[in-house]
Length: 259
Image 1 (cartoon, rainbow, N blue to C red):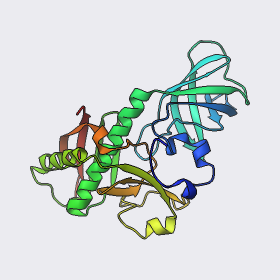
Image 2: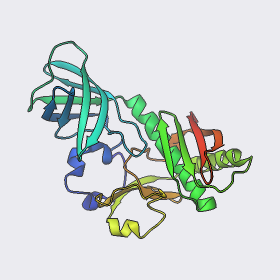
Image 3: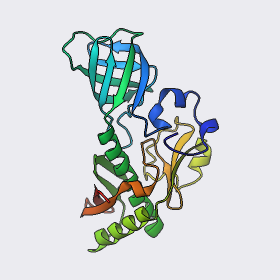
Image 4: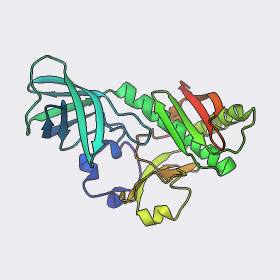
């Protein structure tokens, strides 16, 4: 597995066979079969996929799906009513979308995926540092490749907070914490306030068990996104800004750099 851990027996039934990104963030290619076609919407549903769908503040993957009719560019991936749909564009101008039952080969844009993995892990390190030093949860966030932001309910923000946080994040990166994935029953996760760190409890109650990302020794929380195997893979982080977004809402922006 691209993400280590002793989770297989606790993962939801079929997850490892259908949502490949959830168990192997480093997987870049896969074979799949078309199970549903939305011709009007220009999208496909597959029996399994390695493409990460937009969610949890992490953007979707991009890449290609190739079959008998040529290559399709994957321009968007979204989960709707529990199903993952791939918005596609015909790269060869060969005509219609493939039929149900067509076998396709998928290829992830690895450069973009790895940038998002490094960025997502950097944001979790930021989360872990703020929780460890201040016991303050995160209230929101967003990311794009190599850039991200998180909001925290700080009552006030010191002038040197950015510099302090940047130093702490890079210290934790250099410690090369292992990153593992696990699954916990929802009632167990709900009993631990450190696991569901969003102050608004944005994770729907129907998601059970919860996927847990553990930056060993620093941060352990519910998360569905893709991450690197060790904090050392993040590189280095620069805090590019801190700003007040109103009472009890302070924003920290960061950029991920090469080591």
